[in-house]
Length: 514
Image: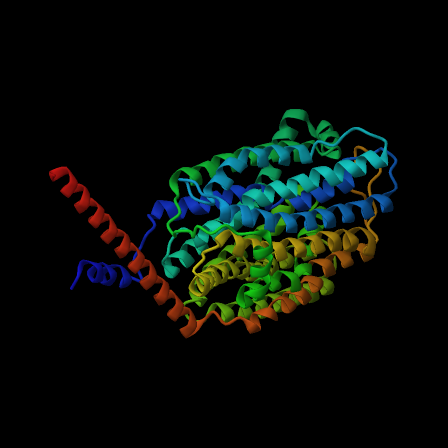
């Protein structure tokens, strides 16, 4: 057997070869945890900051402000969608010794932290026009810069290992830590007010809370934590899947997104399910009116967060029994059913203190479905990248995740437009006009509509989101065949590279001997 064939045999066989150190799997998750410290809570709290705090006492018309807030988040979502594509192209064009993804995450962390801080520092103005311009500019900037960090960080899962099994496990663990990070920011929002009350006293704290000072301090803490955790990831992790050297144009990028059937189907789940995210915005108000404080949103969402963590682990278990396609559908049907049960139970009990315990318990079961949406699509996208490399010879992680991110941001734009329309307009929500009162009292009709926004409306979109997955086919024999072909291809390339290197070394040795 020649050296070339021996190398191929040695390298093609170990489909289960482990490439990542345990510490790398942990720090991959720590990096996503850090990013989620900001992205996990910023949008919902930004919305309430703009609507309830930033311009309190300035005499702005509440309905006019509600309409502007809806438009701000809708436009920012569209900007985010465009940024996803552009950043995806730039990531695939990035060629550095550090890789194609790590520079974006590592060097983007500090600008991301700064712009996040600036979101909660509103100008002191009585001009509605100036206030409107500021909201549009600052939140659009936040959306663009968060895309430049969050989207590449999600790409890393496709680059951490050429072994699909190891890759899936790493993505699952990292997704679990990311879901924990989303709750981590809300822990900060509880702790910061407690410290402020101890230092300032109850009355001074109420005045500070009425102006949103607690949100500014909480953001600073989360921003610092994000930088630290991202740098831990940056220092310890490396990319192991080789990238192709072709330059990618924006035109080719758009074409790839819309012509690869499986990637398109995974991406369309976000578009079909765009309204499922409205629960996040209204959850803050349910925390205010059911539990008594916006800071207690964590107490409301903690059972859901625990359910999400359990769901992430369950997904990994279910994937051992079923394909990614079957797993996704199973969890969607379950999730819609759990939310419908929560609505019926809440409506039967009524919006009062008797609802708290049943609500929190059922919230846990509703959270299990989020393990699916956090993990399964990322595994599917990594599989789609393998399929594209198999068909075209090009490996374009940045572009593939940008395609998914494009639809995700369009869906987010729809969510961020729909959420304030439902919360502030359809429900009949009343804004507080007192600088020392954070939130005004609401009627029972408003509170029951809040429950519908939290449960039934998202349940409808959860069912809609699995429709595209019915047409996804990167599973079973097809997936196994493509994985084997890529392993063989990389083994041949490595063997050829080694053989070329040996020839060059022999030639150099002969030249030196002469």
